[in-house]
Image (cartoon, rainbow, N blue to C red; front, side, top):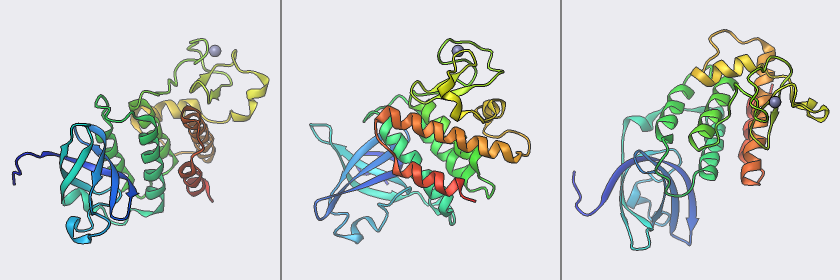
Length: 253
Ligand SMILES: [Zn+2]
């Protein structure tokens, strides 16, 4: 169906913010335009108008216009069908999805068109449907979002001195966002060692370590994940409640 005068694009709703009694502002990851905010009139008052489609993580086709100030107004939304019907995604999926959403919104400038987070999100939904989705998957996707938003972590050289020899004891620098080599570690850094750098390097490459994980690398993953969270909190200067919840759910026994 063609509705003339409207821009039309598919995307995923990442966030909803109530506005007044009847309206809301939604943050959408559009396939081509990246992260955008839409003003949605009347969606909270009339369920009929959008048929309950305006909800977190729904895949929709959005019909919108931009006013002279650049504010985007949604006029119509259509379900895309297939992508919507991922069955019962579970608490882990939900927690991670919320954290990634927060990370994407915090680290992506409004109307940034130069990134490709959309395929990352599709990949995330695909892999998260897997029963065994664990801390490996979490670390992989947090690293991916950091990379795509311009805060990529280089796991192959020291963030401080560029030293490529990372064989000894290394720590994560949660301010600079990188690995510090043994030479650059200070005595006070001791608390964050314990993750397996080789495991993380192969994880960052392909999303899976390729071998069954020993128990200690799970603990290492959690330590590393906490460091990544700390780094992202340092960037935006704000504690993340979504991160706390995610760490509880994935770190719980
Ligand atoms: Zn160094």
